[in-house]
Image (cartoon, rainbow, N blue to C red):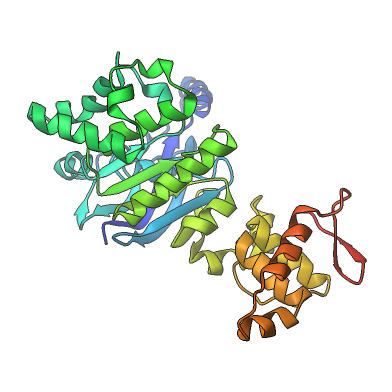
Length: 359
């Protein structure tokens, strides 16, 4: 397994709290009271023993398998970005260990070596573009590795091809002349040119229009299918359910849930209690069951829900299909229900009876 978190906790000192503490310590010293400084643990402040400590992560334990697609979900401030920065040694745990191929990333040599294995793409990576041309921007990382010119060129061409950008058409253009979606692809290519084994993505489709968003998600899925291990932070439960092999849910820095999408999204009430939700088709399926529609208990995407609704509304369709017929008419009816829910938020599952849903 390429990455393992073993009891990882991470804390830092809040500057505002530190200033208040300094004032408090000064007053107490003037009164003749001496306070002990924070203790040291592994050569760095053990902020957990300090009243100024803010714990961003607490006791995180999981392992990422080779070739896996791991989705990470959590409310804003739950620790998602802090967690993924541990994956390539940008930050180190206050307690616990992060292992890459069995090597502790607290070791400087291991941390440096992992930078070529783990590609980290921050949110809005296009803000980091700087070179005069697309070609030069993508080449920056490989050049810094000291690679021969022909190898740099090969990597640049392969990376741009991977993100579906034509090097002949766009290679010599300024990245700032491109659309927002194209700029993000250039930034993405710059990471792929380092040829990482593991791709870590922080909200990779944030801010994109619907078409660019779907194209980018399809690109990520193809890269994963090509052998890359992928870690993706997302606020979209639908995207995580569709793409992930397993999902890790964080809440206030703690590991709230970890398992397959089916396992995690079966707990809708618990997820809603921490400000998250289940994928929209799953939510609608639950509400339709409550309305009396006979639907199996499973994780739904839109197509699967349409198929099962077809059978629920037209049981004869399955029999006809078994005799060489088709369920398309039933699916069309189901799709119409999904897309033409009444404007007031009601769906009519049977006999014209209305049930409100909030999908």
